[in-house]
Amino acid sequence: MGADNPEPAKQSTITIKEQRAPSWSDVAPFYATVVQQVGFLFLIYINNPSWAIWATFVLIPLLDKFMPEDRKNINPANLKSFEKDWRFNIPLLIGFFLNGAGLLYIMIGISRGTYGATLWDFSILLASCSVVFGVNVPCISHELYHRRNKYFKILGVIGHMKFLSGHIPIYHNEQHHKYTGIKGKDPGFPPRGTTAFDIVEFFGYYGIRETYIFEDQKLKKRGVVSLMNRLLANRVVRYRAIEIVYLIALYLTLGWKAVVFQILFAQMSLTILSTTNLFEHYGLERKVLNADKPNEKKLYEPQGRHHSWDAHASSSMVILFNLQRHSDHHLFVYKPYQILDSVENSPSLPFGYSAGFLCAWCPPVWRAVMDPMLDALERGEKLREEEVKKQKRILDLYFSAVWITFTLLQFFVIGFNLPAY
Image (cartoon, rainbow, N blue to C red):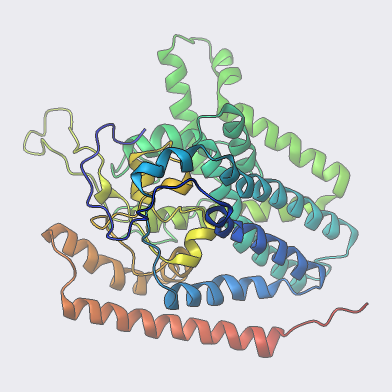
């Protein structure tokens, strides 16, 4: 998917110039997500999961704010060696199996009463699990199902089933990437004025329905006439059936509390995923080329780098396997994460993805920050100096208030539970 002949891009000014093979030092930063997940499981073990929420929404955004931006690109002469190096797959696969094992560990603990015994503890555990695994599971799965290797694709679908959303790879690959920026054709496209609360999917109903219809129409075009045959062949139906069997097995082995946790985790993960899509594509609509001919079929401009928002925050970059280099991903969908480029002429967010959640979940701040940037893009300009200062002032005040609030709550209200050995 994506553009077959993307426009030439103005590459970032920082490019690693030496010709060399990748080393372990190139791979090591991407183990950040493994460290994050191991750290989270340790916090659960010592009964302090709330610190994961504080780290996600305070520590990581602060690191993003004060560390240099990551705009480094791989030397084109080294791309093949970096692309083919198997070592970049290791953190992906460890992360995939670790978050699956971690979810199972948590649900076993819930079923035994070890974790989440009270409503407060259950809620904190659910929220912390959602902001760690609810971000990492879709991110890792997204990278896996964008690979050419069929086994990685299968793992990507299984990854989405961890939050009961096996339909998403179908929608994402066959609708989202093809129709990015086209309202009405990409069901998940967030036009200007959309807020994070407008696109919350309750248990994935809308996405499942739209993807089922898309798959059903595709089967009709292939000549599958019988409704029963289409139902049996529809991947959405198959994946949903597997997820239902999984929930039944979960109930029979671990009980109803584990099932409730799994369903609520799925809902919160979907909310996080839809919010991510919001700040990846907000308002970047593809223009209709024949708008002056309303009786003709609409022709849209080709997908370009200006239809995705990039971010350059360094801590979020490695934790999310370069997902913030989103415009390059959309134009070259089979590019593995380690060789995605940072490009200067792509629209850029003034924050990393971790801070992006905080901004998106406050609609007045979101619109005050994002809409002037859309106006500037419409004019073919960058933000004016006074607009940049106003944007910075809004973000500094808002993030400072949120970070101080989270810190006071964590340090002085929730506190730290000393483990008893």
